[in-house]
Length: 156
Image 1 (tube, rainbow, N blue to C red):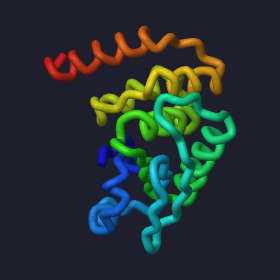
Image 2 (image 1 turned 90 degrees about the horizontal axis):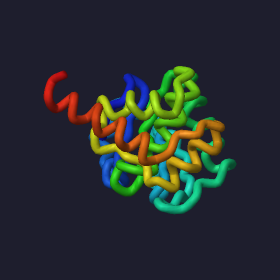
Image 3 (image 1 turned 180 degrees about the horizontal axis):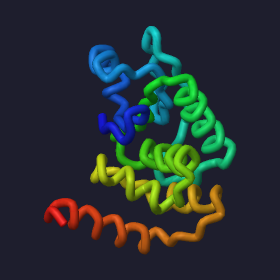
């Protein structure tokens, strides 16, 4: 589980099953994108999202609304998919974009600082860009992010 902001975490399905881990991180809400998991004392929303398939605009809007609502209530939110790489990162990008008024590229750059393995599937990236009306080709974003990761590794 990667902490992106004090209130926002990106993780994988197996972490949604670990009540102790969730308690230690003080997670009080989970947006689940792979499987539905109920944990006592944690508000959950399950949205079935398939990696590599276009994201329905209504699904993205509902997921982001859930994250923002839980954050507004002072809750720490875990966004979780199968591996914590693509789908969860996509929704975290959208949440940062809306909460911090960033572009999708800048929101993704912020996530990579804490979660270098996070990478939306190209189709999910395209869905995100379409939703927000930002035209950032996947290859351009991928190149920029990998330069950022290399710079972080080299301490620049």
